[in-house]
Image (cartoon, rainbow, N blue to C red; front, side):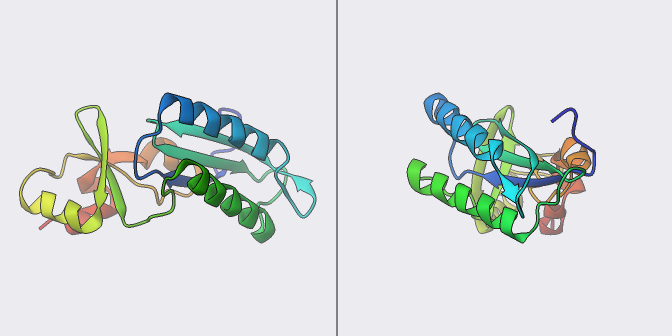
Length: 157
């Protein structure tokens, strides 16, 4: 990912649970195979997939070579849906919030996260994961961020 443009597109798939080390290796092996022949309109995409915290899969496409158009994006969605089935995880539940407690990454439903804020378990300096980042630059600078600096801040009372 180091040699990718800062404007490279990023999609983040957050698991509802941590992957085991074995699962993580298998997933990354499958991901490497997928991106090695991932195309859009017959053009090979310059892509990379990384695993973070054994919980997040980050797909990146540098479009300086070829655009990840609708058909290419559809192929990636089918790939992630297949991973969901094979590993019995949810990777596309946008109602899950991920946050850190010390060095541990936890997830919960958005409604439960709001309750944690109200009860003081989560505060404005809690690190949250902003999975809405869209580029490599945003991923590197704004993915892990204090709650007060993320879209989650609208939940603060």
